[in-house]
Image 1: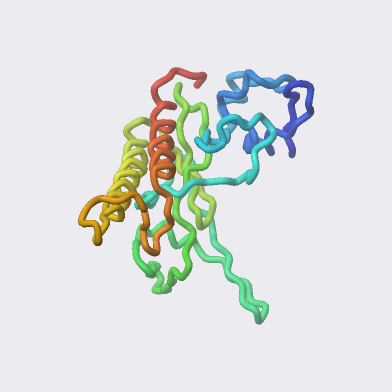
Image 2: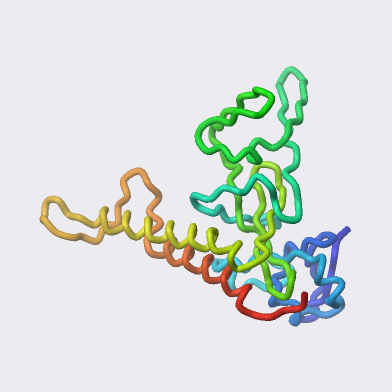
Length: 229
């Protein structure tokens, strides 16, 4: 069921059921025609304030299910507030198979061994956990992670729960700085250059590093202010 509101006289879609895919939590005061009482806020999930989307107005976000991968982080076996879902596989012969999400077993590397002996390989894998939403829970604005494989939601209830994710973004930012400095060495000149050439790595540079720190800052900020429980 679609959820709609009015923003600057425009009728816009802000979400579907409890998922406010097109509305940040801080944008609630900018719209009319939708009631954000305590009971409603207790079940709603808002779009995470991704730094590169600043300035986007309610109802105008692209990619409704966007998530940003948490570098070097794995979800716990037991999710907070949800469970891992099944993952479906199909065969060109016409077979369909659903199995429990392999990511719940907490095994890194190229393969997962399930308790019943099934071996599942990771090949071109993109099911890592991602930051996806925020929600008013327990008096703060908590961050919600999503399993990239099955879609299960993991809620970071406290700042202590969020700290490993915050640190994961900051650690990746520092690795990015190390890559940048390492790649700036000019062998011929015998000094530091400014090429920022990472070889086969994407040339994210300072902009990407700033994005990572901003993600960490915005996660932390949600636990620093009192909001409706």
